[in-house]
Length: 252
Image (tube, rainbow, N blue to C red; front, side):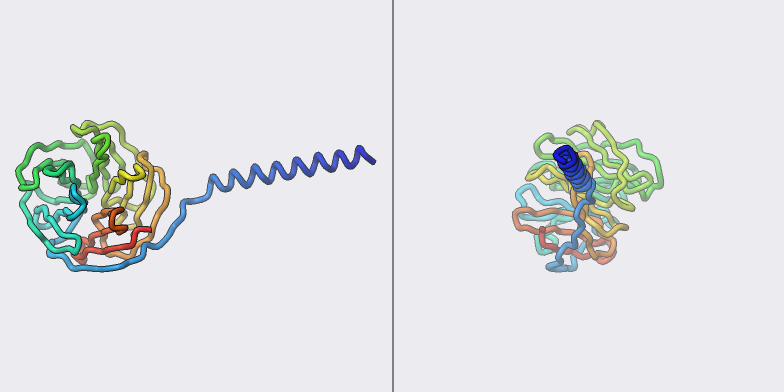
């Protein structure tokens, strides 16, 4: 009798351990949480086909680029244009702030990055070897302010995350399978994550620095092309290329 009880006890322990192991593995494989971003404000902006968005070095302004006018535009946080200047090139798609006086913008069709100062004076440019359709090339750019490495997005076919050093020498590239396409990218220096915007999938995806998904958020914006995460003011800013509007969401 004691032997039977002992055997039952052993079996019970084995079953409990198996269930515990299954539960742990199931938790590890759970998909990242999907939430809806809460819209707080929509503002028309006087920028033709805005594409790309960046927070100024002091966090008080926004920078965006006009796809159809080939200009860089400085906005206040309410979407009012403060100043603009022309860039030598066409199809501007992304922008990032390097420091208090320098910016980097993307020319999609020629696969180039152009570095300029905030008055519009060109400093240098770098061309990337990327195949595919002319209007499915480089789309987003951001800077890791600690390492001075850049992160770039190729829109689709293939969707790519590209990391470069401060001189735009490529360090690695990764095929992305997070969305149908990719339209902008933002680096967070608070938790060292990337925020990636998708136009066709209508979502914002937070990833680690290798492009692995942490969390994603659904949005209702027509042709979203620029993204900024403003931790100080607890907001997420997104620009719509089609609507020429600045959307302000609550930062989760």
